[in-house]
Length: 309
Image (cartoon, rainbow, N blue to C red; front, side, top):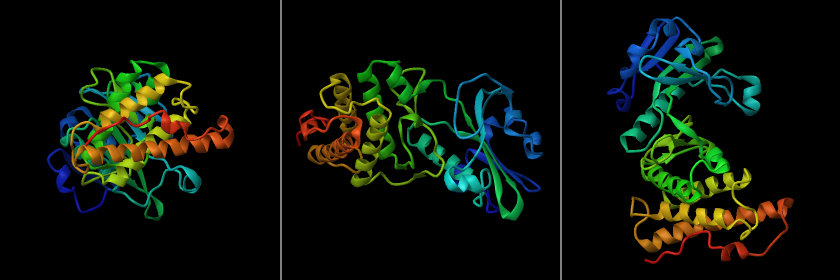
């Protein structure tokens, strides 16, 4: 994680320990619950606590572990794609987990729900590369948003409104997420008032509130992921409950007057632009043979709520 120490944003919450080629980032309020000596000596992530049965899945093995302070989810970072075939678990950038921890702390400080990084380890390997491992606090949840929508874990309007309000909060907080899809949003086990829990902050940035075009792209990306996974209908009007919920999602996102949007007319244009992106995605998927082609009747379905200045 580099020889320059911690960034200012992590100094109040984390500390950095070194031993040989191992650098270990630890959240101070978890330090007493973790086997730090063993971690500095190279103990694999599955030995950082007591194993707990789980059904979590991701790229590579994920370990849910019990500690005296609570449960953690530990994993080794692994590459995907072509790079993964060549350098599966090796990275040139040793500071990558540190930036994930920094993004999480910034979001928490700005009122967004996420899982803090409680430990991250970089181990120097051959050719200047590093093996990277991260442990986050486990958040009690009903599962990810995609599973909750498929299984109707909660009423559809409630889930849609929570998702819209969560994205609004994240965008106002300045989160630029590389892949904010329905699998990266957890539905908490308790009340939804605090919003859904955003995960997978690897390679994310937190800065100024998102610009209008960034918001449009992020809203449409999430909606497209729901279309791709079969949650949203391909034919407008065939599943009105889902379309009503989508309008509720946009309405919840547009509520209030947060940074980057201004008055009601500008918010309405932003939501209409996001709905237009989704309508385009629906048409493209119909043309690809998922369903018979239709005209712009999706516009008549009213994906974005009507709003006045």
